[in-house]
Structures are given as C-alpha cells and as structure tokens.
Amino acid sequence: RSMYFAGGRHFVTAATNESHLRVLSTEGENVGKVDMRGVIRTWQERSSLASWLARGGTGVPPTTEGEIEYVQSLRTHPTRNNCVGVLMAMGEQEPFRGIALVHLDAHSLEEE
Image (tube, rainbow, N blue to C red; front, side, top):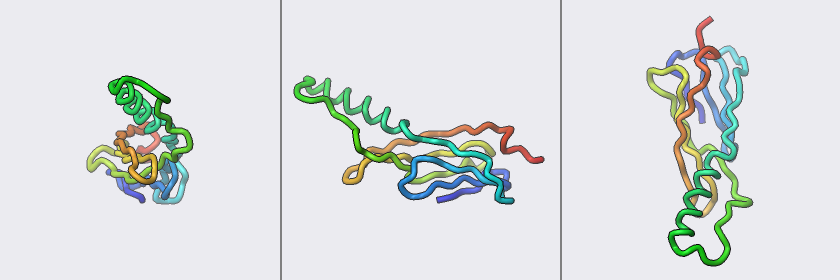
C-alpha cells in the first residue's frame, strides 16, 4: 500500500502485517517512519473492558495479548500535504478496526 501526498514529492507506504508507515521522497530519500504499535490495542482494550464491565464484569477480563496490530489501508489527504488516514486492524478471524488521522511534521515534507 502506498499513496502520494498532495505535494507530489513524497509518498507514504505500509506493508502487509506491519504496524508502521514509512515516508519516502520521490528521489528515494527515507524521510521517516511512524510506528503505529499500541494505537489500536489501546482502543480495543478500552472497548472490550467497557463491554465486559457493562455485562457485569464476571470472570476473566478480556485481553489482546498475542494479537497482531497491522496497517490495513491508508489514504493521503487530497489537499493537505502532511495528513494521512490509516485504517488499523488487530486480530485475524474478526479483526477489531479503527481509523487514525496522522498529521506529520509539515516542515519535513516542504519543498526545498
């Protein structure tokens, strides 16, 4: 998965089963990496814990141990040069999903 930013001189990419994004210039320069590990795990644990408590909180609380977080899809903003939407997922059978809007440091993507 990869998409160009609005300025056309940089793009963002993510590989299957990886939890990070990589930003590159069209000249091949590695601009940086955004590690998304822990983002969806936090969302899922809060959601599962809230559901568990709403059901009376009996037994063992839910856990996400061993689940793999990954970038499922990404889309760049059509006019803003430093924004990317990331669809994160965790789990295999019925994945828990969430969308994060990432704002990168605009100075790192400026024209030189």
